[in-house]
Image (cartoon, rainbow, N blue to C red; front, side, top):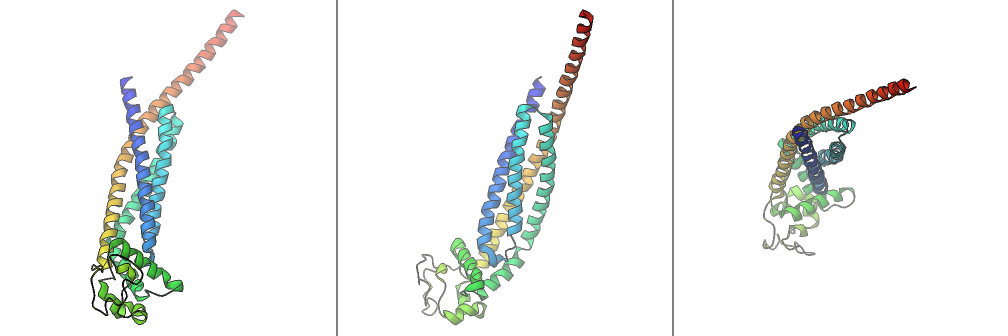
Length: 266
């Protein structure tokens, strides 16, 4: 009886833990998606699909953990069986997502170099190319950096559109205190005060690698807890199934006895 109680408590605690992990993973994926989506063109929009998958896995884990919690509370073998099956599928999908995350982390420099190069080249253009400006502005403000390798890049061919339309100036998003026109003629007058000095390529690369490492490592750690939850819930499910079978058998035996008693009385 004591062992039954321990098994039930362990299953309940692990299912609550997976519920919290699902919430954390889904929330982290959603926040990361909002950030990488704004970075957009500067990283070739390559991160959007994978962070959406991570957010979706977190959401599914959150939902199926509720099923597991209900199954433990009601001691229903069918609910626990559904929880175990769904958890195994999530575990497989999560493993695939973790592999993709670490693969992407190793090649982030390629996507970033290409995307940020195009963003610098078309910076300041309107219409369809506005997305390049928006992505660079967001990165420069969020990561306190300027240009791909520094503010002087806005006076080079790498930023040809900006150089032809705003020579001697830097974007306002490069200013430590951003106000309209704060970057105008800064390079022309050789007034570099109040400008972000770091290049955005290195800062963005460090930021993305950190986010991917933390997310991938957390998802990997969560998998071990999920695996433990699966084994413990399998043990509880078997126990619940045996108890249900015993109750069903007892009910049938009682019905047969009642029928026999009625026949004897008659």
